[in-house]
Length: 436
Image (cartoon, rainbow, N blue to C red):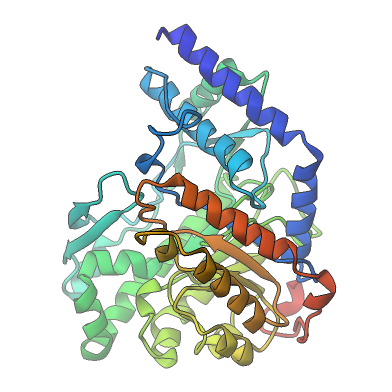
């Protein structure tokens, strides 16, 4: 195909997306997300992400790429995935007529090299396994974690924007954006630098060493937030299709009442954190070596999301110390009834059903339904969102993705709203609660 033909393909797909974005149901979905995130009684919302498109995109006509130009092929695939989700996967993902162009911002990373061996899963969404060689071994090595020197490449940013405006600016709203949320995954980085087993052992053997790493990393992240705000590189938090490891962040509570559109602050945005490696670490150690540092970051944000794959049912009491915590991840390994029992206020429960249901020899619809209904029953009193994510494989079978979404959407849309009345009080008097 010629470059002109590639452009025609992309423009056609963009027009199809814009048409879907203009349907009234999109605003209805936004309104529903705002209600859910505001802890109003509403039926549970559904989202799916991290799909292993590579396993089946060459088998399905509407997913099969045709562009030859490398850049346009990437744009084409992004549009095809969005269109497939909107048309074939019943869920509450909002389709916008916005094409985001991210500002070219440098100097924000921690600067620590990662020495890693990977075992790649062909066609899947993820690397099958990782092995990390320690690069931070001693206390003095913490100096490898650099303080940020944030800088904005305006010329490169405007060039990117001009490219997309020329491509389909008459179809989609080509919009510049800087960071719109702050999700601190400090321990994900730490174990890549120290080794997983080594870091967990050092919680006991060398606690001061671990504290030094976390202190340096937290200071670096806080400095990054400050510099982004001071250089006016942050952007308005809406529409935000994903918060942390959860789903949509539409809310009537952000930005703050004194918001100045010309100068977005971190307090106008979502924040959050997760220490996934702490799945089997005690609540006391979780608090000491992770949460106390994470709270420094989340204190600067208007609303917060916490968690990812780690089970948090036995740590709900320490999470009550997080200011303006609104959403909590309820992973496949979380005991839902205990999470509800231990919660000290109302949160959005961000359910993550196990993606293993999509990876077996055959898709067991009855077991998938039982899992969803069990989570619903045990979540009484908590607003819920259900997210299928971390899908490493579907055995090349897109039909089971469609089947799971169809089944989950049917169940969740049948939940009576009057059955979701909260049994708990949203405690605005919790730490930092003046802004909740």
